[in-house]
Length: 54
Image (cartoon, rainbow, N blue to C red; front, top):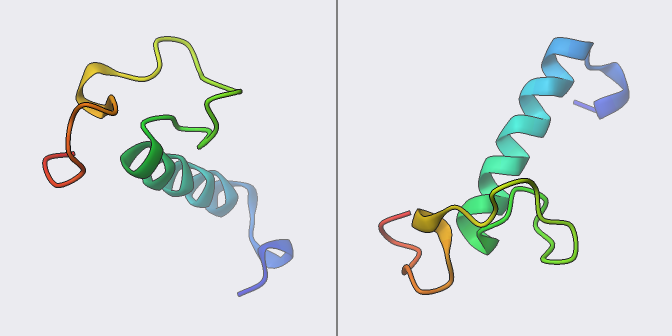
């Protein structure tokens, strides 16, 4: 489904899921070390923790 057809609640859910996937892969919800959020990376998502336990 194209994003343009989603309602605000659905878009919020897509954004939340994307942020979670970014955090698991990169340790940062934005996916970019240039744009970390407050308190990022969280200890369980730092580069020293392997991706499997994340």
